[in-house]
Amino acid sequence: MPLVTIFTALNPMDAQLVRSRLEAADLHPEIANELSALSLDGYALAAGGILVQVPDTEADDARELLAAKDS
Image 1 (cartoon, rainbow, N blue to C red):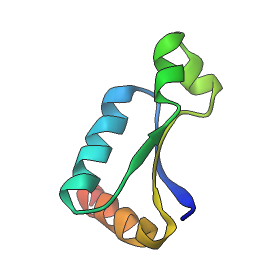
Image 2: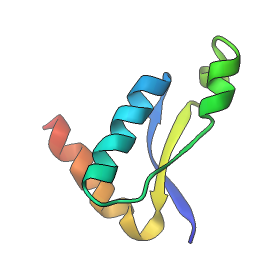
Image 3: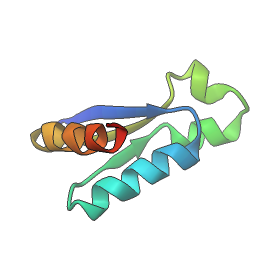
Image 4: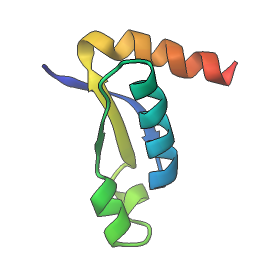
């Protein structure tokens, strides 16, 4: 199942908070580029950020959940 990026963070803490929130809602998030960002200062920005991704079938629900937090 393809993954869709629904959130991009520049630090691991923000990415992990979003991941935790999605898991609490019974979604199945994955985090990409986190170890690269931790290995070199500034690398997260250069690599396009730390990506929080979910299966494409869960993307709409995940975006709604994150949007509800922001409103």
